[in-house]
Length: 270
Ligand code: SF4
Image (cartoon, rainbow, N blue to C red; front, side):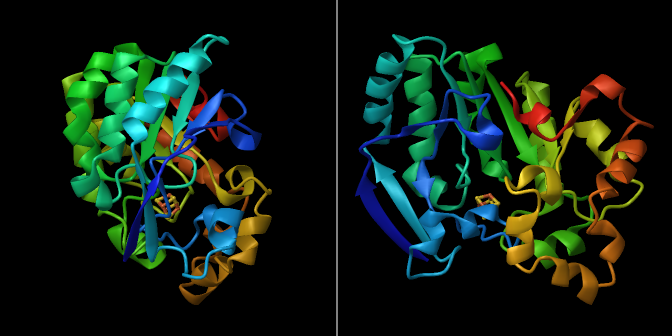
């Protein structure tokens, strides 16, 4: 892993496209060592203009906490501030154990609170910051990606990402502590009929999203990544389908109320 430290000059960027419900996006790092095969960031300039391949490098934003305090103060003079953390990295990827940039950003938010922040991750490390989430209270929701209940499927698509069981455990711990959470089945990966029962034990809100609704290009970016091959090689073609999410939704409805199930962008709104 090529880890470099770079002074952060500007942390808050305007929310746009799929995230246009937010005033800003916020990324503690550039790059992501989870290296998910389907990651749409692989097709974005931050990855395309880099020599090293996606998943092999991470830039750590130094001085981020102090910088965010300044930017939040400025942004709040202009109106409500809603943050999506993060749109093109995972704020709790392994480098965060040592660097604690994300923790610093949350401390900045406790000092200068935004109106809302959605913390999007797939890492159980997120539970480390429960104390700060509790201080932010209603202003924060932790959204944990849980694309499937089948860890062999997770290994097929995202071998470097944390195991599913650890994510469900983290969600349970956050919920028990009183932190607002959701499980994001995003993207929809092949799952079992038992998936909703496992989710029900961990969360009371689920968001379903897939490549066709959520990759920002109606599935074109995902197609360019060649993800459909994973499905055909493993005889999972039926799951690479714009209608597949409806099967997951039907299964969820046996365990969740309709209003607890959000679809695509709706589930990620402030
Ligand atoms: S965790 Fe998110 S940002 Fe990181 S590689 Fe996976 S999809 Fe991309």
